[in-house]
Image (cartoon, rainbow, N blue to C red):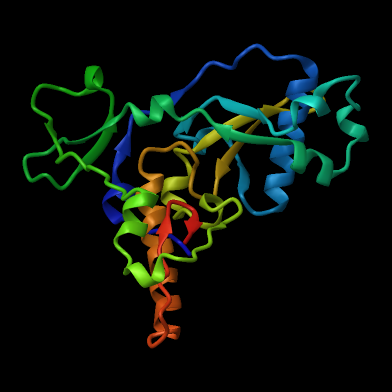
Amino acid sequence: YRIGCRALERAAVMPFSDPPRRRSRFQGELIHRRCCIQEAEGKLRRIGPALARCISEVVLVDKRKPEDRQGPTKRVEDMSDDEVRKSWRVTADNRRLNSLKLCRISESGEQLVWAADAEVGDNAKRAHVISQHQRTALSILQGWPANCREYWACVDISEGFTQIELPKDLQSIFCIRSYDEQGNECIWASTRLSMGWKMSPLFFQKAISTLVSEARARVPNEPIYISHFQDDII
């Protein structure tokens, strides 16, 4: 599925680049290796610095269990792609991007811009605030008939957000950086919905609701209820 929202795709943005954090050589190599793997998976694409409108700092997530972190760690070049994929994940620190407000910068209200409060002039009019509401898993189950609540199951969608494709005009605001073996900077644009962006749950909910509706239509006469909570199918 690909999300589409022309208002966001056409909105201008004040470019920024977060300063890189201090990391060990091992962490830097691991981040670059993980980005290369995601490029092969179609989740990232390499772009030139001039095309990157917003560069957020990358976050390296260690998915290993505490007991697996004990002892020496293999060199990055000695690990297989599966080992790297299983043990580490990279995502963007979207806090600065999430702080931007959607504002009108023309009297007609046709031109929108994502900008920090300090960067917006007095004449700019802030667009309506987009609020997001999600039902809790408990409230979803309570809404089912009593005879359908005796048995239930939950199926987790693996890497749910990365299954939703971003339109190309939005990809340039979801950029991260890594450094190759020679120390050259590589800029990566996300091609999929970014985890941690404040609008991601809203777009993901729309996509998964479409799938759930199609599943319901296949069992119209069965006492089965199919709902979802974030990336879990209930």
